[in-house]
Amino acid sequence: MATEAQDLQTEGEAGGNEVVQANGEISSGEGQRDQEQQQRQPTRLESFFSMLKSLILRALIIYFVSTFFRRSQPPMVTNNQKSPASPGLTMHAWNYFENGTIFDLHVWLSDDPFEVNFKQTSNLLWFQEDLVYGDWSSGPNGDGTYHHSVSLKTTTKLMNNGSIYLHAFVTKSGESPDPNSPNYPRNGLMGHHQRQLNKFKRVRVNRNYNLLASEKEKLAFELAQANLKDSIVSHWHPNLTVNVVVDQTNWSKGSVPPPLDEFVKFVESGKTYLPIVFLNDYWNLQRDYYPINETTPELPLHLSFQPLTSFKWQLYAVQQMKNKFAGNIFGELMASGNAEDAEEDQDSLKETLLETNIYLFGLTIAVSILHSIFEMLAFKNDIQFWNNRQSLEGLSVRSVFFGVLQSLIVLLYVLDSETNFMIRITCFFGLAIEIWKIHKVVDVNYNTDQKMLGIFPRISFKDKGSYSESVTKEYDNLAFKYLGWVCFPLLIGYFIYSLVYNEHKGWYSFVLNMLYGYLLTFGFIMMTPQLFINYKLKSVAHMPWRMMTYKFLNTFIDDIFAFVIKCLPCIDWRWQYRVDLKRVNEFGFSGEMAEEAAKKKLETSTNRVAIKDASKDDNKTAIDKKMD
Image 1 (tube, rainbow, N blue to C red):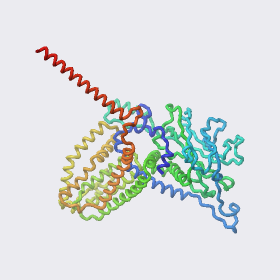
Image 2 (cartoon, helix red, strand yellow):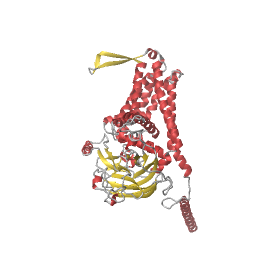
Image 3 (tube, one colour):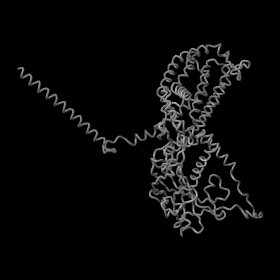
Image 4 (cartoon, one colour):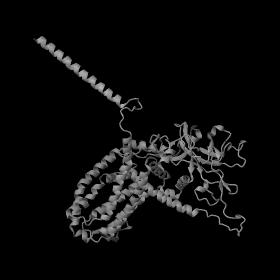
C-alpha cells in the first residue's frame, strides 16, 4: 500500500491554506499562523487516532445511507413467467474491451464539463497510442505506467475563479473521439470520464492581533479588516492520474451499487458496458494546492496513466463518495461545519500511507484500536468506581471540582478553535462525567425559593460525612493551599507572557488560549493534592486502580508510538546516510576538503605564531646586545 502510494504521489509546489493579512497580501497559512496555536497542535499520533475514529464513523454513515438508497435488483423471472420488460433471467453485461485489446488514450482540455472543442488542436494535452488492455508490464518502468507533463497558460477567466476540465477518452486503436473525424467509431463506443482540474478553497483572513496594541494600531487593523472577507479562490494542483480499470466483471444494469454506478456505463440495451476510466487525485495533499492568480502565468500539469484493479478502484470511488457527502448535512456535522478541515484531516492518513512502512502502519492501526478500547474502558471503570463508592476517605474532593473546571476549559477551547467533531464529542463526554461526579462527592441542594437571575434555583454544596469527619478534608485543604502558592504565580506569569507576545482574536479567545496553555504546561501539578493525601495516609487502597491502569496504558501508547512514528525514520536515515567525508554537496565541497582547509588554516596560524615568536626573540636579542 505504501509502495503504491509512493508511485502515485509526485512532488507538487507548496501551497496549502492561505491567510490574508491586514495589508491584503496572500501568504502561506503555515508561515503566518499564531505561534502559540502551533505549539498547541495535537501530536501526529493524536491526530491519527481522532482522524481514524472520524473515518470509521463516516464509513458507517455512508454504508447505512448507501444501503438505504440502494436500488433494488430487478426481480428474477423464471422461464414459465415471461415479462415484457424482462423476458428471462437478469442480463449480465460484458466489458467492451477484452483483455489484450489495443487502445489509444486521448486527453483533452476544455472549459465545458460536457463538450470538447476538437477543432482547437492545442487543447489535446496527451495522445498515447497502442496501449494494451490488461498489460501491467509496459511503460518505461515496466509497470504499465506512462507519464506526460505539459504547461498550461493561465487565462483571465481562470484567474477570475473560472473552471477548467480535463476529458479522458479511451478508444480502440486508430479511432478518434472527434465526431467529425473519419476515424470516429461507427458505433460511437468509447470510454470517457471528465474532471474539474481546479479546486475552490477558502482563503481565510487572519484576524488575530496584539491586545496591547495602541488605539491607533487597533483602528488601522479594524479598517484593514473591514475591507477583507473570507473568499473562495480557485486553486491548482499539478498532479493527476488517469486510471483504466482492468476488470471483466459481468455487471448487470440497474444492480451496480453506488458509487460505482456512475462509472459503469451500459450500452447496447445493457448487453455491454464501456471500459471504466477513472481520474484519480486521491494522493493530492491539500497543502500542495496553491491559488491561481497573476503570480501564476503558467500552470504545470503532470499526467500519469496507470492500469487499476477493480478492488483499488472501488476503494478510491468510495473515498470520492465520502468527499461528496462532506458537502451535505452529514459532512458538515463530521467536519465541524468545514469540509476543508475534514480533507486536511485525511492528509494525516495519506502521509502515513506514503511515509510509513506497511508493517509499522498495520501495527499503528492495531494500536489505535487498542487505544480506543482502553479509552472506553477507562470511562466505564471511572463511572463504576464513583458510582459504587460509599466512602470518600482518602480521595481529594477539591480535585473533582477542579476536574470540572479543567474539562470545561478544554471543551470551550476546542469549540473556539473549531477542531474535529470527534474531539468535541470526547471532550463533551469527559465534562459530563466530571459533572456527574459532583453529586457523588458532595450533597447538592437546590433552593427554589432563592433563584439566580430569577430563573435558576440556587445551588449549594455540602461535604459528605465520610469526607468532612475524616482527616482527608484537612489534608485536601492543606494540599490546595500549598498548591496555590505555586500555581498562582505561574498563572500570572503565563498571563503576562501570553498577553505581551501572542496575538489573539479577542479577549475571550485570549482567556481560553491562556488557560488551556497553562493547563497543558502545568496541568501535571494538579495531581499533587491526591499524592499529598496518599503520602499523609500512607495508603493507596482508595484509588481507582482499574481506571488509572487504562489511562496509564493509553499514555504509554501515546508516548511510545509517538516516538516510534517520529523518530524511527530518522534513526533509519541516520543508519543509511552515514557520515561520508568523500561525498560532495551541491556546492562541490566535501568533508575531506573541509578537513584539509581546516588543517591548512591551523598550519598557517601556527606559522604566524612561530614567526611572531621568532621576531620577538630577535628583537629581544638585539636589545640585549645594545645594552651590553
